[in-house]
Image (cartoon, rainbow, N blue to C red):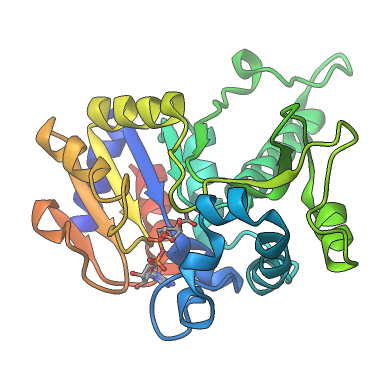
Length: 278
Ligand code: OAD
């Protein structure tokens, strides 16, 4: 079947790249953006534009506190889909994970797979020396690109310092509007806002990875905003096999060889087990 063919191709040393959206974190409880329960049903995108941040940082932050609580108020954990991608990356079957999500759950999953690998090494290492590097463990590290930034952090617009976002959001909630850095600069969530350009180097790297991929998997994204809409098309036009895993149809389905309309937490662990079984 389709998934088996994808697994076979990935196993034949193909360069595989995963591209993810809010749908991969939905089973962890993180709300998606579009759809009936989506964030944009409750909030107006216009409140969170870059233009508003520049014009009215006080009002922006006042609203952002509510959005931040809605989006990231819970203690979210990576789910089986994040874990399957992380394991495939560590097994050398996935070159990169590109994500539009700012929830940090791919990083958490990679960290936990890393911890598991080094715990195993601790047990098997000889001479009492834990084997931790790639050469001795046989593990590899996929590239993780967070295209829209990371909501757990804030960044000072003047000095560029990045710090943990939670205490800063708390300060804003307590009335420090807008919250500012020691240098006097205003903090901005370390994410790409509407109307703000994606960093050039990041988008360039994403395009390069899409171009060189043999298998490009678009997972849990409506694929309607840029660069989500164009990355799978770039991959397809450079000869990659494009697979889409999403509950709903997307505008890119017609460019994909494989379209699977099932839950990510079913499909990705299954794919991982097929790749490992080959
Ligand atoms: P969307 O909310 O637009 O799309 C999420 C997709 O995931 C939908 O098509 C759902 O059908 C699908 N989905 C939900 N749960 C799923 C599951 N368990 N298994 C499989 N599919 C599932 O989110 P994105 O495409 O990520 O930008 O949105 C892209 C960008 O638009 C976001 O990064 C954000 C937003 O405005 C910024 O904040 C800059």
